[in-house]
Amino acid sequence: MRSEAREKRAEEIEAAAYAVLEAKGYAGLSMLAVARAAKASNETLYRWYGDKLGLFEALIARNTEVVEEALERGRDADALLELERLGPVLLGMVLGPRAVALNRAAAADDSGKLGRALGRIGRETVGPWVVGIMARAIAAGQLGGGSSSAGAQDSAQDSAEEMAEVWFALLIGDTQVRRVTGAMDAPDEDWIAARAEAALGRLRRVFAV
Image (cartoon, rainbow, N blue to C red; front, side, top):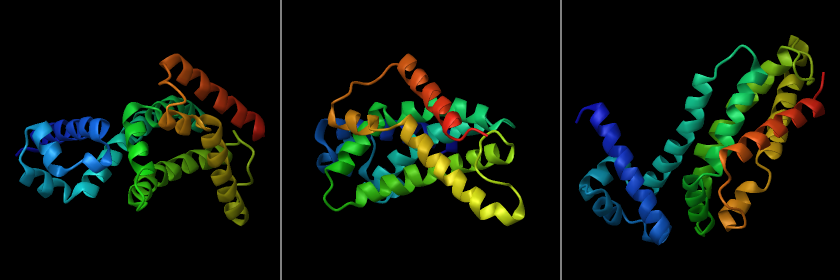
């Protein structure tokens, strides 16, 4: 199968997996159920994803790609402008229905395997990208976080990591938990944009040069 055709088929299979996940939870997310929903062969699913956990990991990776693509499109010499573009995309992703479905599945998994997969493929992938943006903002003098001289590289790296943690807290806060528990409805684009703008503004005030 050509790569383009396979990519399209994978998207269809993964969309079917979300539908099964929404209807039956992770316990009901069998390879056979997904294969039937996607009108694909069970053998294809096992060949492409390995097993049920592999399929779940593919769903996480696909969701994270939205943020990665935004980073690639938004590459800019101005680190804070890049962060400004990234904020609404990242917040929209983590509060979106697919992320909510993945997090609900992980929360119901007593083994912790799904939660570890979410951390490894999600936050642990996005986090270093954001730390890199913060480091560039420090080096450019846009945020106050230490010198970029060789003798202060460790301090600057620590500052970049701290800034990333603060930004995540300001941007996401408890909204992800509230969405997963049903305490918060899906926000609209205006709400997401306003929160992302406020998070960046607060970050700049906290780490003002």
